Length: 472
Ligand code: SF4
Image (cartoon, rainbow, N blue to C red; front, side, top):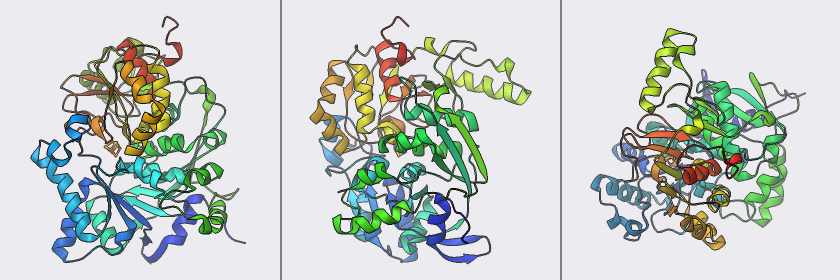
């Protein structure tokens, strides 16, 4: 009898081309890249090697594109910074030279690679998908093995359509129970990271399981898998089911109608076997999860919104006391301050974590209950999300509430494109990283969900969205 296997084991085993000692050469079905891939192309150029399978590589302009509508309307000319413009131009040149599909500036399917990619049907159950970006873990929501790679690995994939890898271990995170009112997928993954820590999944691929996960939409599953990397995971995955198949039906790069039945049958076989062994198991009760917000400079440093800024004096060791004190100094926070008393300067709703249509709908439902009192940006994750939101009138809801409606891109998540915080500015952000300077030198980031971000915009401070309008 065959040994029971996990979802990850099944995908890994069928992609192994060769083994040398403890490394395997893994076949890569698809690879996604963005403007930061120029070093990989340069490596190929120096080695006089061309891209082996250009039809399996897909490029997106996202990190370096302006999101200000006036500048965006000017195309490349709207990018004032020469170095930034050069990155977008290089992507155009490299993809043209190698015959790679580019969803670039002005393309109707342009967007953040982890938002636009799934919309195109690039991530299919059972495949290995690599990306020249750490949040490629997002795509594991479709039951594929999806992980980020560095520049030299990207060059290898471009040249060989394969990659040498060491086998990671299996970690299963099981979440059961209904989510409470006002609690979102972002709160779920932030609660997971607060529990296991930023190093909790190092050396592992995470499989998210349990009834809470099964009930999530694809948008919500992507939010969860997106932040797997923030817990140190090599990848995050969710077994494909009817929700997955329904989402993929009719997408440009998903199996067409004729190929669909055999594909669906194969996808259904991918779920972890009932008695498959996981090297590590964690379980959470969804009922205990509250809306979360980060107070520090990594996603583990987060608490339910009902909490208060931690006191370094209460930390168990001198090392921890020094670390928390340093974080609070950067964040400009006083120990013991209730999180809901923290005033903010800016709000950012967008990114590959929370820039999808469902995220914008949730934020708009809150935004229409008041008026933003601080500069608040809404940046759709893709041109498709923008079109869909505008067809539903969400842009008008946001603008009527004083929010700024912008063009699709990474924007304030990465601060590489002219969108950035000023030193000392404090931002309530739906993105996924909050290390010092992430949103601009000296900027201070509080990670939270789209409805929590919209609520913060209306109040000018962090606030429990569940109590908005009830005198909180
Ligand atoms: S939105 Fe942020 S995390 Fe996502 S791909 Fe862009 S820069 Fe990276």
